[in-house]
Image 1 (cartoon, rainbow, N blue to C red):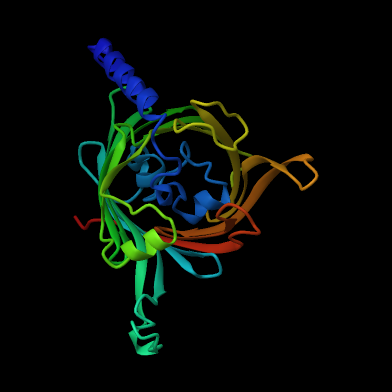
Image 2 (cartoon, rainbow, N blue to C red; image 1 turned 120 degrees about the horizontal axis):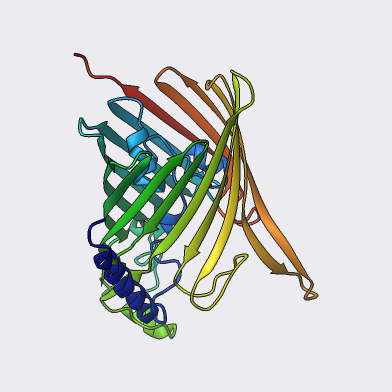
Length: 359
């Protein structure tokens, strides 16, 4: 870089802004964007920022889009949580460009549908009318526009995403948001190093509330009537290192370690402070002839206390399978959103397809 002082000044002001915002920003803002995408990633406990190489790179590390094998790539994912109450969907398309670059558009939806609205169930005279029951959805949407480019330094790629966020709570609340992610990828022999900075400029959600129907209920129950406001999401930094090795001509293995650093205050993770918390997780993948894949990962390491105050360390195991034939791949993962007793294990499937342009 010809002007490294420009990068230093930029990072300096970003850090200052986070220290200032960190005291007031809510934890877990836009948390639906922290769940993850792709069955391969879930099977490896989301340890994939360095080894991702398909369409899901738009989420994990946009710089890895330069590793796409086909000129056009399609992908879909579907999963359900909380016994099917909530649905999480992902899809998109990516294109390889002639200048050693790549471009992609992806879509995320996380929603709970068909929630009964019983506000008009009982009329002013106390009569019950079930015909007055309607339904609504609480849904979060995100559209990502991603770009990646190989640099002149051998093995180095950079990338980024601009995301538009839409959050809807029936007719009662809605928000528009915007944010930017940047990333890098460096390959050196059998090692690959990945870096991802989510919400690097701080993502803003502008909320608008329609409380006409709920104002009386809020006041009677002692709740504060929400007002139009702006919600911010502080940056999250992910560092990853992956190592791959071919045991034989047909059998290969890969291991990856990721460190997630959040800047919104203390979280219940392995390494925590009032400013930055670091959550480590690790994943493994073995393959036979690059056709059949077996995956395993461990993450979500936390300290818990029982009713007697005894401390214990818990973790979340994940596993998955994959099958790839030519340009078609299907991946499966058995994973948990956070806690077995709360969400239960979910089955996640991802389909990807590569298409080559005709000469």
